[in-house]
Image 1 (cartoon, rainbow, N blue to C red):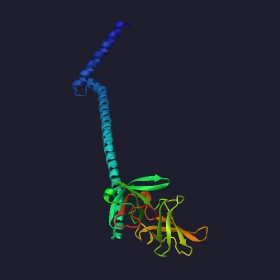
Image 2 (cartoon, rainbow, N blue to C red):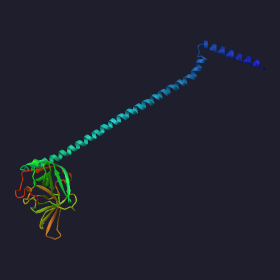
Image 3 (tube, one colour):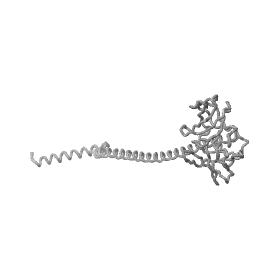
Amino acid sequence: MNFSENKLIFYGLLLISISLFLFTSNKGSISFINNTIGVIVVPFEKAIVSISSFSKHQYDLVVNKENLVIQNNAYFEQLEMLKLENNRLKHLDIENKKLSALLATSQKNPTFDKTFSNVIGIENKDNSSFFIIDKGSSDNIFVNMPIISSGGLVGRVYDVGYNYSKILPITNINSSISVLSPRTSDIGILTSESILPDSRLLVKYLDLNSELVSGDEIVTSYLSNFFPENLLVAYVDDVFIEDDGLTKTAIVTPVVDFKQLQHLLIITNYTNKDFINKKGGQ
């Protein structure tokens, strides 16, 4: 079979195919061309729709993430503000309790005139501590005026400036006060020892037969030079006999927390004419 014959066969087959195509087209069936186009195009359309949906989904995720970050930052700021407000309210509550305790102390001593004062500093000198307060001679404050705080005795005015004063606390090693036990009537001298922890003090020169025990109150005595009697000072922790065997000594804890001392009351109408405006023993 030569080339010409092959060519004739090819054209014959082509003619038959066209005839069949035209015949099926006239019968109303899906055309070959349309079917071919559908097979090719539809998958591309589906792919495009899928890609478009995926892109939109990813875009929505990015937008939602950004919104969540913004919301999270806003919630964090609100939380921090609430923490600050909560701390402020806690501080106000603590401050209110301190002032209420101070008012209760004032009401327990109605016969005394008192001036409110704040601690504004601490001075350490020769292993002795002094408190600085915001009242001075311009407020009619004088040396040796007694100082009290929530529940108990703090000390006395040691030095006076125009708008400030220096306070000698009972925890100062230079302080010595005559005190007694209301329960047993034992009298001793309250002193400070630097070797004692937690601001505890000693009541020395108690009678050897003293029946003082742990938990007993210690108050200022009628022998005190600068303080009204019966001001609460401390509570007894322990009692022991001195090495010489002649007296007893009590270890006591002050009522006032000197580590947290902020607000004070200065007793302005109690004076001892023999000692006022002099620095000396108490």
